[in-house]
Image (cartoon, rainbow, N blue to C red; front, side):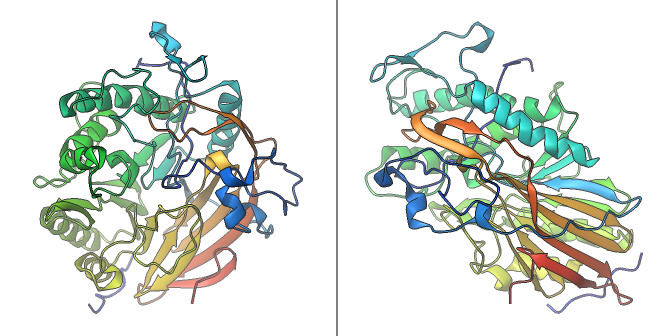
Length: 453
């Protein structure tokens, strides 16, 4: 297929559950938006002081349904679900683990319950029903605020010193990452994940007089290593993906893989520790590697090149309980210029927990994601042929209650009650095709996937 011309410029927890999202910086996690739900979903009352949703009228669950995208015969299909799940949810009592009691409540510390198991089964079973084995996740798999113990339970060991914090981080990772993986694996789903800020402890990484934040910033390389060991390594210890940078801090976290004859996926690590802080940028070695990958793709005439990274390239996106991280310099960055000149077709990002589509310099930017714990789970179904791309946003309207909360290492616990009683609805569609010159033309878009101008 002709490319467009150069642009200008386990066994650890069999009975485990997945995580959901906790993203508001210091306030308790919010409940789903009350009211305005045509599906009839309800939200149990939450005191206004504990409900940031009261300050965010409307949202993904309130958007109207639009007609389904067309079914494309013979297309390669994939799911894209960034920020799934962005919360630590796993059975801490499974496998003979020692049980700990939260002194303030007298309850056994646990990061899941039967309601979460059922709710997650409903969402993941639907994902698996679309005739694909591949799930792309552009970061924020877990809450990742590890190496701390706000309730003083000792679940992952003491956290008084930095050495103890790092050991506790490793112990938490060995519980929550396998819990995340197994949910997909038991459905035969292959996951292709990217590093998000929550895999690195959650931003920010600089704050005055905060030993916890200082610990996070200093140990970003170790956090990436642990993530790669858990998510990007086979049982025999070899990397899942061999095409990756050979040098630099992203050598274990960035990779490329041919998903299908028509689709090349490039996964980026958009977090770089430099100048005493953590930046949303690519390190030089990863950028050189990306240029090589894109040159090979052009030489091989790969029909569609899809890149995923955690942060959007622009701040002009809808957001929902997000810290609104954006890639540094955005469309003026070396990364953007490299993608344009290298013939990238689609850039998938997370972070925002909402959906926005732009098209600039021939690249479709799809910023998307969801908040499972607020009853707002969503995902995108993609269909691809040699000359056609179809995207469909699927939005759930769940039910949540904050009468009690799950235990987590930080004081922000997910709501103790959650359910997804109905299937998702379609809230956005997009159809694009390859032009004679090799570019990408949007032929039709509806709902939340209407191009942002």
